[in-house]
Length: 285
Image 1 (tube, rainbow, N blue to C red):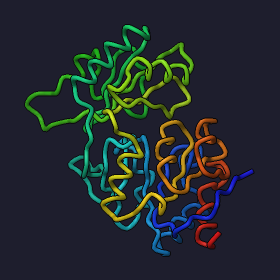
Image 2: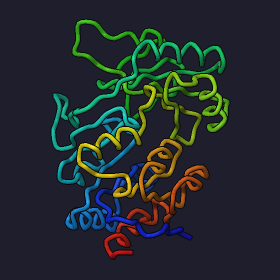
Image 3: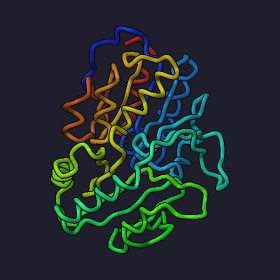
């Protein structure tokens, strides 16, 4: 059953929500009830900010539901995009990038090759995805290039800058949480390491970059305090955000560590769990 936290000490001014496994149903759609709840929140003066591990090019699913200023946090905090403005490819326009620098990324590759043999890598740049031959391909998102990670991390010459947003590391044998624990021990304070996939796929960002840190920057620019934010999530990449927000909700389908972190819980993503909480917030409970 949902676990409702104590009523916020101040009114909620911002809803910060993850997408996959949280706001979106398993079929990657937004239910009519959730769509209505988001609209009602905005009419009541409560902002809605999508905060996701997805790259900008995967944001079409929510562009029609963007809030008034249309900003979203992508790549686990590595980028802020404007959902209402198109770049030259017709994708959401980048307004802030917090890149993973080449030197740190190369150290990550070297350490994981040594301490977690069998790891394969992909590089997420602002221009798209590049991966090694052994990395599991995404059939709906073909690679922009295939080569060893060391080559993929070299900044292309003679082109518009293409910052690295995330380094992805996949292991075909290790359990997902075991791989995350090992990588954090190996990489120390070099980078930020998290995961959101049900497989052993790690998402590696620049040190200090997370959903929480970029959300904090965005809220500071708007004059919104942590206690005025209600956040929703389901996977380890949401934990820092849920810890930062004054009110936080783990989905009924959430990872155990997420359930242990959030101040409250709600129904699963297929049961309109986010909508349920928004409705209660609007009703004053």
